[in-house]
Structures are given as C-alpha cells and as structure tokens.
Amino acid sequence: MEPFIIQAVLIATAVAGLLAPVLTGLINQPTWSSQKKRQVALLVAVLLGAVGLVLAGAFTEPLTSPAAWGVALLAVVGVSQTIYALLLKSTGISAALERTAVPADPSA
Image 1: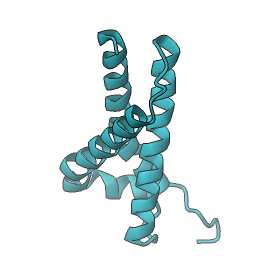
Image 2: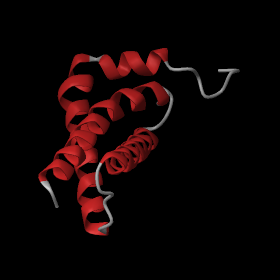
Image 3: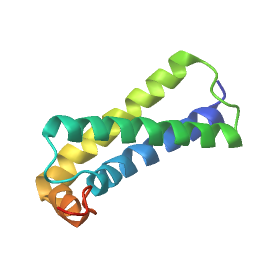
C-alpha cells in the first residue's frame, strides 16, 4: 500500500472516530438502556468508518482487503470510544448532547 493511501485511510479513520461520539450523543436518548446506547455507538462508529473509508478510496486506491477494512473499522471504534471516555463522558458533554436530542417518541 502506498504512503498516500495509508495517510488517507488514517485521516478518514481519525475523522470518523472523532465525529462518532458526538453523533452518537445526539442520537441516544436519556431513557434508553446503557446496552442500547452502546449498540448505537458501535453502529454509528462502524457506519461513519465505512463512509470515511469509501471516501478515502474515492481519492486514492480503494481498500479491497477485508483485513484492511476490519483493522480500519476497529480503529474507528477504538478512537470513538476513547474520545467518548476521555472527553465527552468525563466532562458531561455526552449527557448534555442526550438532553438536547430530539425524543424518539414525540408523546414523551
């Protein structure tokens, strides 16, 4: 793999990992169980990671190896969970994001 391709994948992974916790906080509802919130966080991280990798491949050579996809998506999940634990959860930002989220049930 060429250095430019590796850099594009790293940038896509980092950006997706940074955006995932914020987007997750906006989606999650305060009334949801912690298990459901974790599932949403994982789904958002994987989807953002996949989009980032596809976009990185649009400007470079697309990733075709399943192993490369797996490693990159695991990295996105790792970055997003680290950002969540160190920044959003410890400062209370995640709770504030959940409070500002649109309720899943309009009657609630």
